Image (cartoon, rainbow, N blue to C red):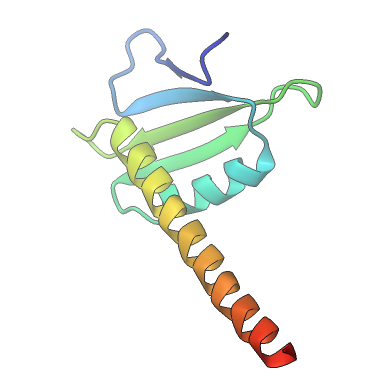
Length: 104
């Protein structure tokens, strides 16, 4: 089984300029995660591309300000996105329970 995550650094690039390859992912994660990462003031650039429609992987490029490893805003972005998803799910479940209580 292949890894779901790769880190690609070009020759001469520091740890603040990295491409992460996320396998088995598409625009759903790509656009949401890019938004969360770009909210950080430590990030100069963040973007993603899908190499080919038949491949389910995204190339995620992050460039940070000096001295900050690109893995840090990636980790923070994933954690923040997880928290947002938990909040949405919790809010949905509360509203669903309110509606089913009302119907009974």
